[in-house]
Image (cartoon, rainbow, N blue to C red):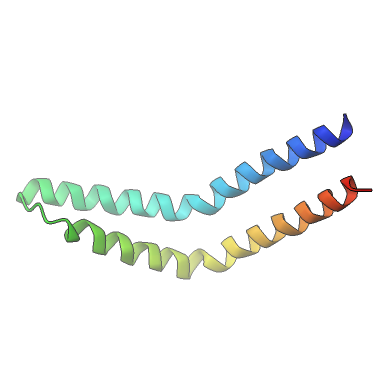
Length: 90
């Protein structure tokens, strides 16, 4: 029963870690897409590359700014996950 609780706790932490790591990229992309969509609606310009290029630039910028902390968070989770799995294997 204790092994099941440990694995469920690990799964819960995995979901939260994935959400925290994905949030900066998704929120920045959402904001840029909304702004570009409003500008396209106001100017009646319906060019597909007009939405893709700013989103791509923002994703690159977010990864440059937050990439190290995101990778550190993932590395901490992986280290803890391997420790829990190794402890369960005994």
